[in-house]
Image (cartoon, rainbow, N blue to C red):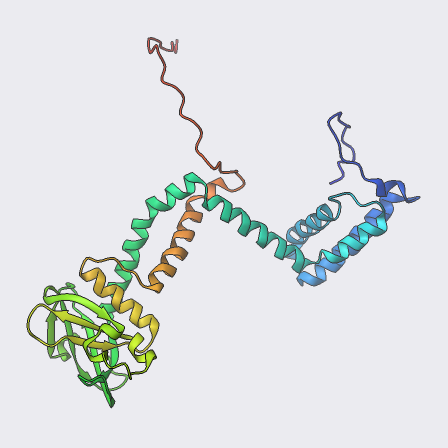
Length: 301
């Protein structure tokens, strides 16, 4: 780290005054470093297989403690005391987050995210449709929005994604499609409404939590709408996303936004693995001007 043994350069500007304040500076520096190594080893609960990792942390601690160069070895030792293993990890995480945030605004990264987004949305769409295919157990409500005690019904999407099968069932039951007597063709669904817009949730006296989990399928025919109350917010988001996907509409739930951000971030990181340690420019380099004369060749003889 101190480049001991290397020839001095005229461009070198680093000066460590602490080495001129002690009769045996390098021996003292070595002793402080060994004490730091032992302390960090204990903090990391390291084993013999962790030598490389421990040394990398110790090197980082010393590098940060000597930037800027301390005036004395005592100040160097005091600075090291504040740079514990947990502090170094926090600093690394903050720097990584700052770097990722800056890189996410770079034009090449923005363009990559835009290119990958349709693939991720299609993946989320497939997951939502699979969730509908697996089906969900719903609590039964009356046409006026009153919960019917100990009454449940099940709904699931057919394998060809053209029909919703539903019917009454027992609690905790997972009936097959053949066990569900009622059918609703997807082409008969005119629209999806949620919350207070649901016909059976117009009554403002209903609990807000119940209304927020309600959604209804409005049909083209004169049939009554098919009404749902999801057991939780995640199921509500999955079902409304799945219905919107079946209707060819945009999935707008909070779960979709979260999943998109997580999967998009992971995909971009995977595609940028080969650029680790490379500074990505904010803007791409300029394209060279077109040659005015293409009358040339290379003789391989």
